[in-house]
Length: 102
Image 1 (tube, rainbow, N blue to C red):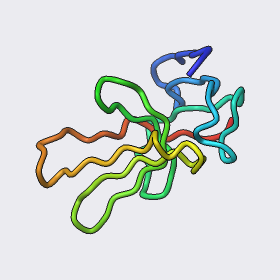
Image 2: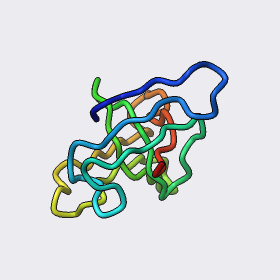
Image 3: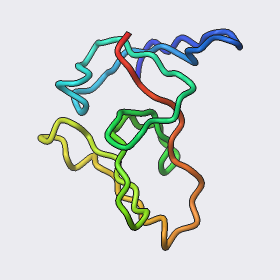
Image 4: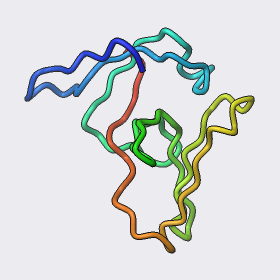
């Protein structure tokens, strides 16, 4: 993430930033501006997440067993996917905010 702009309290949008990698292409391409709202992504939507101390923009999925999957949409970059077994680990929610095209 580059060029992060934090917006004032009370705004429906938390921040705006530009993507600096191709891991979410073609949905979000490098250099595109995205907005971060206060909504929690539904399964299948893209979001901004904290995992392992780093901020990640990924597609959010959860299976019927409670396992959380954070996918890079560019499957050529699938090594950046994250899987968390929430049944075995006592983790706080990973989701921060919904990411949408501006």
